[in-house]
Image (tube, rainbow, N blue to C red; front, side, top):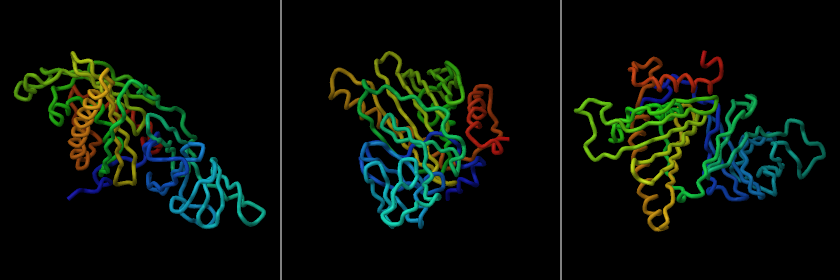
Length: 331
């Protein structure tokens, strides 16, 4: 039996920030699709010029769901029920009958950013009144990397619970079977970024819990951008191999999140070798995330965890992440 998330995790369900809605490759020009995130229905579409757009799904006229039968004409979204047309800003621009467009004929729209093969939306509150994005996550230069491999999960958890793993080096030894990972640099943080570097420290745990000899030495640079995305740069010591893994976590409702994981590896001179390496590293990454999913899907969020002196980064992370909730939620 899985205890519902809302009974295990005492956090507001929808933090503010950038969240993934789709992979870019899955949304072709003219496509219209529905999405259910943040406890509401959304419509995601791509204009004929190629721009991804997100709006509330229900037509302000008589409530038709634009993700079911809606279509794109040029840069406009057309309702399947009565043919009313909506521009990129959500305003109704044309009707096939009548002469006066009602003032209330406007969809709530959401700010979209598309980069690194992912369509992101900025969630700033239930009515979009939070003022919009004040920052944007930087793109990763993936020109010299392999094609992206991806794997998706849906689980009973919360974005903060998944992102918090980024500050927890100790779990690598016990969940992922690597050497113990100790903080080597950071954490450094600002309004939009939590940046920390871990390195292998075999002696960081008691002898009985150390990894076997021959386990690789690793350097893992982790950058959390906002409330729902984390980039990890993994490099084994002595090898000219860098893996970039990205985790995107988007709340579906108060009980579930959608998680997308993308993996790229630095290309080599041999295309076939790069493909094989990309497949192997992606498989290892997805296997490790699957181990985390088991924990996330059942764990309890402790408001006041019994942390020891080696785990101060977790406390720092929680204080940093609290900014993404409404002020009354973090008081």
